[in-house]
Amino acid sequence: MLKILARSIREYKKSSIATPILVALEVVMECIIPFIIAILVNKVKDGCEMSELLSYGLLLILMAVLSLTFGTIAGNTCATASCGLAKNLRRDMFTSIQKYSFENIDKFLTSSLVTRMTTDVTNVQMAYMTIIRTAIRAPLMLIFAFIMAFIMGGKTAWIFLIVLPILAAGLILVIVKTMPLFRKVFKKYDNLNASIQENVKGIRVVKSFVREGYEQKKFDAAAEDVCRDFTKAERILALNNPLMQFCIYAVMIFVLTFGSYTIITTHGLELDIGQISSMLAYSFMMLSSLMMFSMVMVMITMAGESCKRIVEILTEESTLSNPEQPIYEVKDGSVSFENVNFKYSQTAEKMALRDINLDIRSGETIGIIGGTGSSKSSLIQLISRLYDATEGTVRVGGVDVRDYDIETLRNQVSVVLQKNILFSGTIKDNLRWGCKDATDEEMQHACEMACADEFIKTFPDGYDTYIEQGGANVSGGQKQRLCIARALLKKPKILILDDSTSAVDTKTDAKIRKAMKEYIPETTKIIIAQRIASVEDADRIIVMDGGTINAVGTHDELMESNDIYREIYISQNKAGDDNE
Image (cartoon, rainbow, N blue to C red; front, top):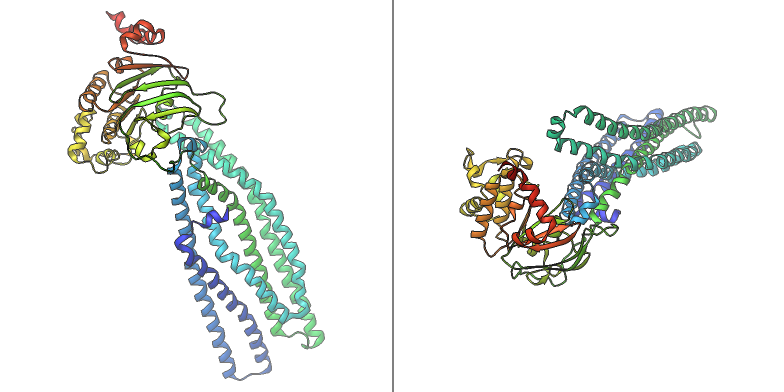
């Protein structure tokens, strides 16, 4: 796990290495200062010259300045390294997510991915900052101070060997108790973020049904759950500080009491005032370093679960990959399904598609119709290899889709979903997702075919109109037409409209289909629709039922021979017939 995380250090290796070195130098300076002070105290007691006093004073100032300098530089390099690691981790995670197949994405909640890239990365950043600075400083100071304490205090220093196991036992107990709690908390963080995301995304529905109170209670319950577990963990962690303070004061009392007794009884022969002053300084150093070390362990404990969650994202392998020798050219828009069965995961018990055999000629217009849950969308997702068929073969241009370079295949298969997304930016920015080098004339032509040009011209800024996140400032029908225009700019060999004209009126729907038939006759057009009016003039219509192909034929043929198609047609036209 650490090896995987370390890959994200990259250009910040120098800062990461420099920090411990600078911290070590800072600690050396700090540990020598009490030793010099002890000598100075004894010199003063013995009545030294002023020149000698000044020389020791200048030496102490020099060491203090060096310690401050090393500490300041270490702080800067530490901040650079930890923030750089956080930046690279977020970039690496985002890059990994971009490579995921739909199957990979299905494994993680959106809210979980957001938590991992924010809260979890911040925890790792803080832990890394603590490790390369405090985790180096604490043990080095402990070791140096321990050695100097024995040099200066002799048998008095054995008190530290008694205190250390007590502190270590307390620290281990804290870690063992808090680790499971933090593991639970991060999972609940995901649920909390999911509640927020769902509420904000569906705020119009919440307000229209006046469910603000219900959503508030749901959020409060999730927040209270997180708070309860965090409070429990923090209570255990809080025990660490009093334990450290107790040990510090116990040591100081022992050193003062035993040291004073030794000075008085031996008349300063075994221990003098300078030594006891340095012992107090070293005891404070040792115990404060133990407190720092306990903070390090607490931070690492908190970050441990975050590390696992980040590594899950970084090590997740896409279920789709390019072949060793991919094909980079799609000959035409023909599509073939041969004995295809498909389910969304290996553990799924039921096939979403069964026994699919279908041949679509290049340039043909195909309609797909069927009830909700009949797997219409599942069928078309196999064409652009958003998922791979579980069994059987899907061919595009006469070639198995698994033999193509994935990017090449998807550039030749444009899919417009019913709930397609517009991104923050101008209309031009969104259209150029289809072709980044598209000219103004090409964009206007695509919008004319999609019947989007007519409403774009009504905007004061025209094609430079700014689209809010998710297309919040345009209607559902306008959003769908812009998404169709964006797909047309790719000039694909296969164009798939997955119920993507559901939000436009029948007249506009007809105009879009007519324009596509006239201007892109060589492109294979696959139209999934709920309205028979959207597919009745297609070359062939596929009727889906329960994940299988129930029938294939023209509108007239299906009206005569297929009960499902006829029933849908009658139900959709009944109101019109009754009015006549």
